[in-house]
Length: 330
Ligand SMILES: NC(=O)c1ccc[n+]([C@@H]2O[C@H](COP(=O)([O-])OP(=O)(O)OC[C@H]3O[C@@H](n4cnc5c(N)ncnc54)[C@H](OP(=O)(O)O)[C@@H]3O)[C@@H](O)[C@H]2O)c1
Image (cartoon, rainbow, N blue to C red; front, side, top):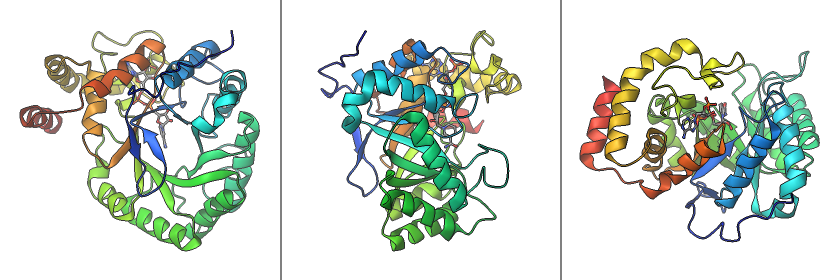
């Protein structure tokens, strides 16, 4: 059936935050297609999640060349869904992709050379059936390629019209500063940085968030639910079909058990706040106005709806924050 999005999708269903010093606003929650949209997954399930997200005012979908498995298949599937459902709404969408991790054999299939980044962007556009992406990221810093070369490739992607904005991901604070300076000089400011950030992963608090504020770069936090640990998913064991149970998932079974003591304590606080743990974990990130968007994953429409409802309670009392901090530091 053809898709008719909710007419009221922009009526206070989600908040939008300005991305750094740019003209772009992103939804407080964005949807990532790393897992659950690949060739091994059920396409109609991914399609239902994308429709549900857009109906709720979620305008940002995040991809990368290697998402799948197999690598490339999330972009292919997104392309199929985009053509069926979202073609008329291209100008309402921020679609991002990245290049940095292994994509094809030989010396030009990964990292940060101009050769790899620009070839990969062409491949991504082909797979998705798009003329341009909104954001093109260098997915990870490359220790062997001059930073100037990587940033010049991002600048060229923008100048050639194949991307509207440039972003970086997984860059540490000092390198972010250098990258931002090079991009500024080239005339293509760094729009956004995509780091891993959750209650369980807080490296960005040691300098990176400050750099991004100083440089006027937006922040989009990935794996905000620690791949599902910061939810009720594993409270009663490892369910079949969960990320930790899958051979291709990036969450290992042996990471679940050690996290559970804290997860249960955090879950009690969430219950007290009248939220699910997933909602509280998202709200905890959004309490910092430097965070432009929280980039979630989901494997079902029900999970997505649960997460999108986080916005109804973003405020924390001093006491709640203190209790959460004590649990996280214990
Ligand atoms: N730049 C980078 O290097 C990088 C790296 C990783 C990810 N990312 C981006 O960040 C996005 C999100 O990453 P992520 O998938 O790891 O995020 P996440 O939100 O931390 O984890 C998503 C997983 O948590 C579980 N979940 C989500 N909502 C739930 C709920 N309400 N109740 C119970 N369980 C719930 C689901 O696991 P089940 O599948 O078990 O149901 C879901 O697949 C990716 O899609 C990608 O766009 C970027």
